[in-house]
Length: 112
Length: 112
Image (cartoon, rainbow over all chains, first blue to last red; front, side, top):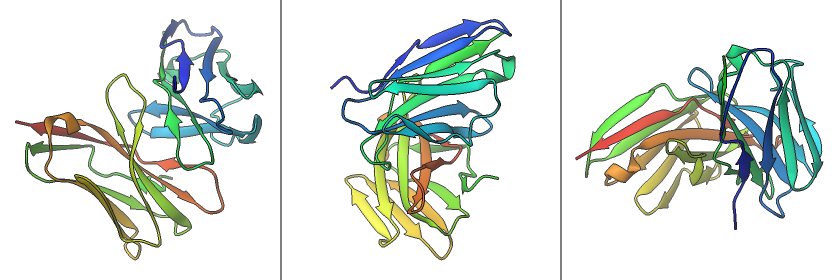
């Protein structure tokens, strides 16, 4: 069992550039969650999917953020254009049912 | 508006002693609570949970207590070990949502 896989692990980009974060959930899990971790706000839920369908995107901070889940084994979180305040660690998590979430190792994003 | 609060950002405890991490919540609809543990450069991992029908759940050195009237839960670690040094997140969910709402975390340091 490979667990939740996220790529890249680190991303450094310049303000205004497009950033795409990728996630492969655990096989058989029907929920996928995207979180952002910051010192001030802890772990914030950005969006989650159930059976590849976005259920709640109320945590997405702005229209610059978008997420897709084209199939059960892949999801992306895109930021366009990126800003320095988007710098954070982004986590993907998956679960079978909503309460026992397994987290990936995270992507540390730095926007200069 | 933080629905789940961890008011102590850090805690330092001597090895062998008890560590007590606290968490408060505001939403009376929450009925399931979890603790996650996070090491640097890794994703959070599930530690222990409790349903609102219980007031205590124990798993080895870890015990979670729930006080519904006070909307308060705590995690006790006895005895504390240096390997317990990590950030601990409290999370909550309700029957009417698939979301987990996380607190901001408490950094525990266990020193010899």
